[in-house]
Length: 131
Picture 1: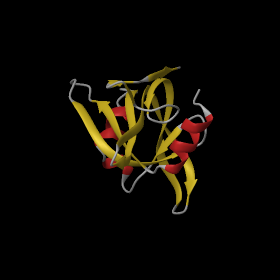
Picture 2 (picture 1 turned 180 degrees about the horizontal axis):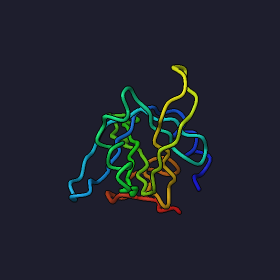
Picture 3 (picture 1 turned 90 degrees about the horizontal axis):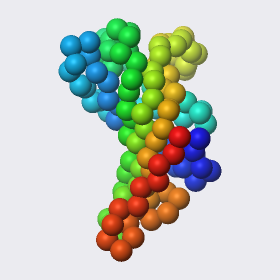
Picture 4 (picture 1 turned 180 degrees about the vertical axis):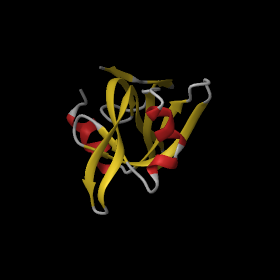
């Protein structure tokens, strides 16, 4: 799904923001640490079961958005990042702390900027769309 440069970028990053939605329609955005295995994103944390993102997915609200972005430079201004929409599921996996529940995000489609090509050309944003 992702280009080689996008994959390298995702593997070099550790922080993202995830957006979930509750059963009553309330959106929630949270900063998270993540791992990228080349296809899916794994999001863990301490006391995962107590977080809104976990509760929202556990309540069968599995549609999520994830954003990984940073500034390669501020002089010149060089933003880069990837935003994706996908589905989440709760899975158990081995971690340094033993067995743990994590959110596994499988992307459906994504948008990227500043990775395969500059984020701007002639003053206009260049956004790559992928699926």
